[in-house]
Amino acid sequence: MRKLVIAISMLAFAGTMAAADPLQDRQALMKERGKLAGQVSKIVKGDEPFDAAAVLTTLQALQANAEKFDAETLFPAGTDQGKTTASPKIWEDMAGFKAAGDKYLADVRAAVAAPPADVDALKTQLNTIGGDCGTCHQTYRIKKS
Image 1 (cartoon, rainbow, N blue to C red):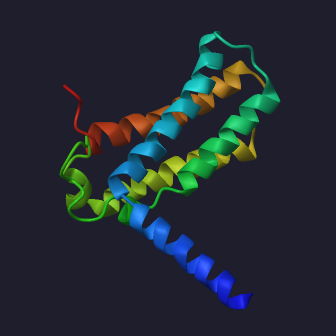
Image 2 (tube, one colour; image 1 turned 180 degrees about the vertical axis):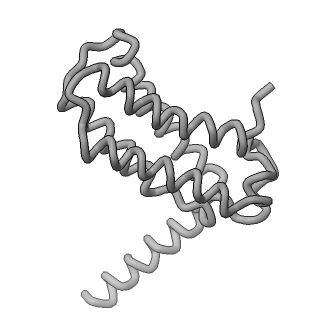
């Protein structure tokens, strides 16, 4: 039985290693992030009603997403090629890129630690978090044409 468990574990590990693609992984992470940000954006715009519990759940999901961000794993050397909008500036200034990711994570954590009580508070938090996204995109992303 022990050998079977070890064999299954090794196969599962090998399968995840073979499937690991930093380009696809980072794109999936960013798509998820955009979807979550879009959910709270709808509330700020008045398209959806404010629900404190739902907002907190979304902010917690944003935090979990941000915690998965590992610049070195998701942006290893050589992954600036192919279908990507990642700017070469990422690899030229990896320390600055990591700092931008760290700031985003800190701001999302702060939002989770002090959940907004109303739309105005959410708007303030979203402006901070969205500002982090915008700053990073302006510096480290190639605009789609």
